[in-house]
Structure formats: C-alpha cells, structure tokens
Amino acid sequence: MSEPPLHHGHDATLVGGGIPYGRLFAVVGVVVLVLQIVALGVAAIRWNAMRRQPPGSAPPLRLPFAAGAAILVLCAVAVGSVHAARTIAMEAFDLHRAPWDAAYALGVQIAAFPSMTALLLVVTLIWIGGLWLTLDARRRVLGAGAFPPVAAIVALGLVPTIVGIWRWRASLRDALDAIAGGPPVAHDPTVLRATDAAAARLETFAGFSSWAIVALAVVALGLIVRADRRIQAPADGVEPRRSSRGSRAISAIALVAAALLLLAARPMRAENRLPWPPNHDDDRAWMERTAPDLAGPDEIARAPVVHVWPPASNRPPMSEIWLNDHAVAPASLVDKLWVLRDEITRRHPDTKLDGSVVAVISRDASYAEIVSVLRAMHDAGFLHPQFAFTQWEICERPTLGTLKRLRTTGVRVTLVDDMDKEYAEDAQAGVRGALVRLSEFDSYDALARKLVDLRRAGQGIVLDLAALK
Amino acid sequence: MKPATRIGDKALLVVALAILALALNHFLLHWVLFTGAQQHRWFFNV
Image (cartoon, rainbow over all chains, first blue to last red; front, side, top):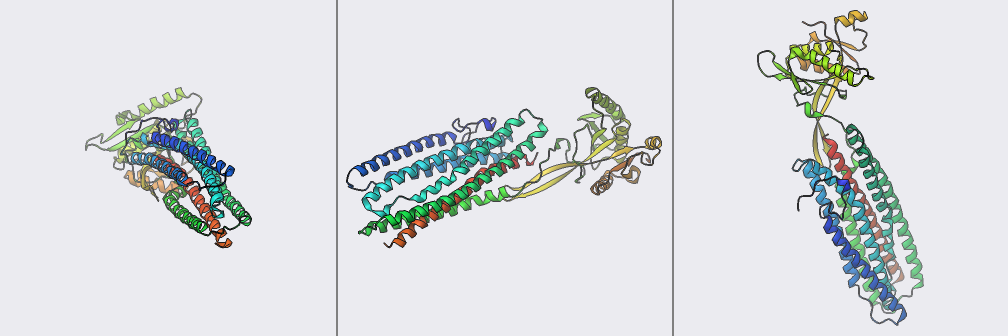
C-alpha cells in the first residue's frame, strides 16, 4: 500500500482517494452498481415477456447470483478499506508512523462510512428487485414453490441506520468545523463531546432499524400466509422440493452469516461500550518526569512556570532554575518574576493579577534552594504557587490494549510570611486553611506528600515561609 | 409437499433473514462507532 497523503481528513473525499483503497472502492462500486442495473433490466424484460407469452423455460438464476456475489466483493473492499485506515491510525498511536497520520486515518473513516454504507444498501435493494422479478418469472413457469422471497423486504429495515450514519458524519464534520475558530484548549473536549453525542444518536437510529426489521419480518410472514392460501400446490412435486431445499440452504447461510457478523462485532462492541476516563489537557512537555510521583487533587491552571531541576553539581548553585524555559540565576529570580508580573499587568490592565505560578520542582532538588525559590515567588507577588506532580495513569481497554499516559496534577497553596501576618494581625495572615510551615520539613518529597494529603482532605493550604531556619 | 411445510420453510427464511438483518445492523453500528473509540484513543495521551 502506498503512503497516503497527509491532509485534514474530514476534507477528504472517498472518490478523491482519501481513504486507502478509496479509488478501488469507487471503481468496484460503479461496476457493481452498473451490474445490478443491468441485472434488474434483464430480469424486468424477461418478467414482462413471461407475462405476455405462454411460459417456455424458466429464466436462469445465474445473473442474479453473479450480481449477488459482486455485492459481496464490494462489501469486502469496503471493509478492507476501513481496516487499512484503522491500521494506519493504530500504527500512528504506537508511534510507528507520524502522530498526525492518526488524524488523517480517523478523518477519512468518518468521510467514508456514509458513502460506503449507502452505496451498499442501494446496490442490495436493486439486486433484491432483480432477484424478485426473476423468481416471480420462474414461479409462473415452475409453480408455487418458487414464490419470490418476500422475506427480502427486511433489508429495508436498515434504512434508519444508514440515515443515522449520514447524521453521525454530519455531526462530527460540524464539530471539526466548529473548532477551527475556537481556542486550542477547547479542541479536544469539543471533538470528544461531539463524538459521544453523535454515537448516542446513531444508537437511537440503529434501535429504530431493529424495530423496523422486526416489523417488516412480521409483515413478510403475513404476506406469505396470505399468498399461500391463494396458491394451489402443484401436482408435480419435484420442483417445490428442490425449492424447499434451496430455501432451507439460504436460511442456514443467513444464520451462519449472522453469527459471523455478531462475532466480528464483539471486540468493537466491547471497546465502544466501555467508558473512557476523562480527557485532560495536560501540557506534559515541561514536566520532564522529575517531579514527585504523586497525584494532586488540583488541575494545573496556565501560569508562568518555574522549574527547579535536580542538582547538577556539588557546588552552589546546585539546582538549575528556569523561568518559562529560560535559565535564571537563583539570586535574580525575584527580579525576573517582578518583570514578568509588570509585563502581565501591562498586557492585561483590566485583569487583576491572580498570583498563580506553576512550580515544577524536581524530587531531588536541594530543599534550601526550593525555599529560596518560594521566597522569590512570594516577594514578587506570586502568592499562589501550584506545585506540579506527575504520575502514570494506566487504562486497560478491551480491544485497544493497555494504555499509559503521564498525568500532571498539582496542589495549589497560598504563601505567607511574617510581614503578611503582622499586617493582617492574624497567625495565618487572614487566609483560611491548614497552616504548613516550611521549616517542619527537610525534603521536597516529604513536603509534597503532606500538601497532597491535606488537599485530598479538602483543606486549603497556607504555606508559612517565615519560620525558616 | 404439505402446505404447513411450505409455509414453515418460508417462515424460517423470513426469520433467518431478519436475524441476518439484525446482525448486520448491530455490526454496522459498532463498525462505525469504533472510529469514535479510536478518536478517544487519539486524545488519550493529550
């Protein structure tokens, strides 16, 4: 298979060769459609001729059978085409391909389903029409045993599902169009919400189809009973017996095919039924996996990021410190933060500075330097650091397998010092929550675990800088 | 052939084709919805 072009999937068209083997499906689809129309035309001509003239020999079933086999070939091409797109997506998930190939493969699937299923339904209905006329013509020659299979009308019950697939595609296309002008942070939730809503609607349509199939089967049974009362059993018993054997054989094949379809759907059903964990808009690139292996209860809000890296040497400054991805000398951190604060205030004059800052601190960082970093944050007016943590989240999926993702979470605290307490004339500087003194710890890991425990208990945290040793 | 047998065969054909249609409906539903599962899988690492 040649490498598929990279572009936005939902713009891809089936005929344009967007989906793998799309051109093959289009060509085979046109051929099969023409074949069905020819078969229907031939059957109609023979049926008409049979009505006008006394019956001679019964029209053969070769053409309807060949047309039916052609539909199976078209089904195989459609399934193979979607399977090829799914394989591309899975390879992209496993990073055996570029990640954006997954977007391509998903987009072309969304675009292809309505065209494929609608074309298959149309050719099947035309085929049933041709088969019906052929069998009716044979009945006129051979007798009641070859009565046309009214049972075939149950195929019409699939129409609601086909309509549902068109609507499903339209919903997803609208969602993909809607995110084009929206903020990046809203992209993923919007698409996933639309995916779930479209799935629920499609299930409703499929439910209509199930009821329609049952109702049409009841109608078909009624028609058979009514028709049977009108038809005299032929004197010659040979042909009806053969027809009866054929009918039973078709029934058996249909039941086997149904069992195979149910088996094929099982792994997909298991995957579709199991809910997914909530999506997270984590920007994990800056976490670098050196933060403590903890799950904090707070989502990390976007804010300036201060990194405190693990010790790089035995001489001060032991830990390298970064502010928004730029290395800064520990002594100048407070000045840099002041500049940043002024910049934020100037850019957003109508917004009150909320004092948030993300503290990505390595579990091995020097505690003394952590304390000095927190002091710098406080003195620059960033009173609400969010301590960031990373933890692997494992998700077992029935078909997609074991998935892992690095989750970044945090704990939000409020920094206070002696001057704050004095000004507020309060031991916690007027801030409510559990008081934690930095001096009670000697490692960041111990401090982080205490903070997580308190936040998990639902408490706000006041981190006291004052009692430094 | 007895009329009851004749009707029975036709009824069996109706039931069998109805089961096939229901199975096809079930397959189509989950075949399409699996794309949604892949969509979730794609966003899982984000």
